[in-house]
Amino acid sequence: MTLNLHLLRIYVAVLDHGSFTRAAEALTMSQSAVSRAVQELERQLGTVLLERRPRGVAPTDAGAILGEHARRIFAHERLAIESLNELRGLQRGRLAIGASSTIGTYLLPPLLGAYHRQYPGIELFLDIGNTQQIMEHLLEYRIEVAYVEGPVTPDERLHITPWRDDELVVIAAPDHPLARRAHLTEADIIGAPFVLREPGSGTREVMEQALAERGITVQSVMELGSTEAVKHAVSAGLGLSIVSKVAIQMEIIAGRLTILRIPSLMIQRRLSRVRLIDRPQSQALTAWLRGKG
Image (cartoon, rainbow, N blue to C red; front, side, top):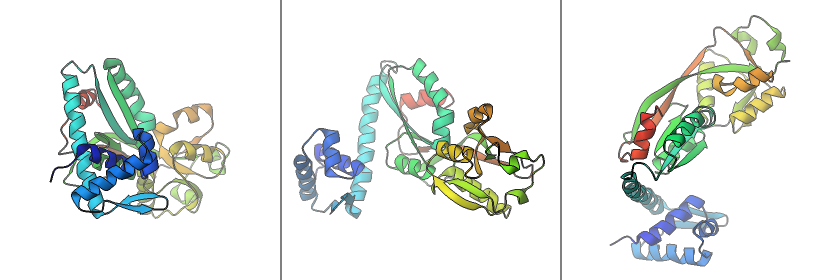
């Protein structure tokens, strides 16, 4: 049995987009042509790869296994092309990075700017999501390196290294009653309304662990999908929250937020850089890491 790489590429597009229609648009093909290609691949392999559903498709067990191997194949294909391009001195190529939201929004842009100035021919792609999403994309070979805030479960497929340390702080609107008090303790925030990040967020996981260790329970009034949304909600008086200190510098200067300093509630976390052990390192990535990425 020989895999037809053209059909396999179409199949991966359907997997990535979750439907024949969206895959056809991305590939500039007709929906019927995409559907026929997947059917032909299923015929050649003698197995069903996709479950057709009213609102899209989902892989069968066989389809998921094939998808994982296919992404690995195409990752190596891209690396081969990039390696040839890199013989011309990093004048061409692509670097795909994934980062959880705080890192991707506040820490990586200056590094990406410096990298682009040094290697303007390298196409840069930054995938931002929560820690869970970014780790899934790394394991699916969509990105070359991941930067995450939350704890990473040890996995024999992963190379996990410490990257930076980060401080989390309690924030409030400047007119919040607690903001007027000079001395605060952990007891002052027990039961307080809190605006939280969504499940899967590294910031939320670290926050919940730190509060649980101290026996602090809070009242969740809202869950939001980004640090920016959390900051706006807190500034509007919807509750307190805990976020990275690097994420609120402009709001502190502008007077839209304030830090509630609780001496006994110092939360530090380790930010991690994660790579796949079996994925060869491109020269574009090597140059990125050399620049402290």
